[in-house]
Image 1 (tube, one colour):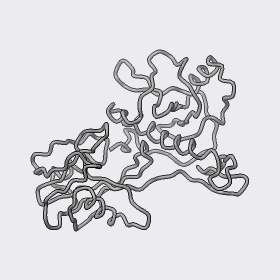
Image 2 (cartoon, helix red, strand yellow):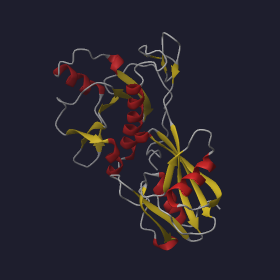
Image 3 (cartoon, helix red, strand yellow):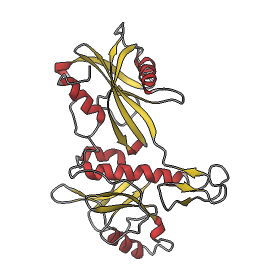
Image 4 (spheres, one colour):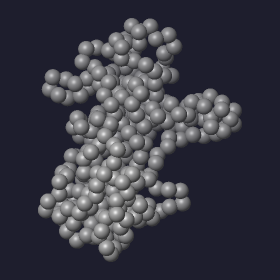
Length: 288
């Protein structure tokens, strides 16, 4: 999956460090990140030294190290998020790529880094002022937290819990397609956890709301961070309980249909929890 990096683990503990010339910088513009596609079709993010040169050429008057936020450490290299405008003077080959399209590029390490940085970008952008007293916030020195110097309010990155649901009926799996979204491929059912709700209750409610089915034997499979939506996704398998007639919520789904285990129209892309769960069912390895 996306978080299964090619070189080992991610060190995402916050560090109060300044960027160095060779550190990677993820430049965000609206919902896109700056990257370069190399002749071998690999992807590359700019380095701090490059970004500083671009900013000087653009005569960016107020940039300083405080505009760069530490994200994490990957493969002996620190990654930073640039919170200002950049890219007009970028070297040839660099272009802005929408974060939602990165999963199509099959470059998991860069995709994961960019989506995680985007998650933090949205948090920083939305919390420049205290929601309690409207005072400008400052970054804590010890941990990834914004603090209000006036009232002491502490603001941590928002991570929304959501579930991915594989509804099974013997050797059949329920697949769906979203309504009104750019993503038109087959998917499993999904939804956010509501206040005061267990994850298992979320599974039952979402299945009933979206396809009008009852389920039982709910069992956990695996989780996945999904920074582009600020989520942590938790995958569950469950069994149909009773009638298999689908009653589609057309505001949420364009279709939902039962498919046999040996004829599933979606394959594992090596990126998403959804696609891995489909493959696990196809191989008959789903938790019982």
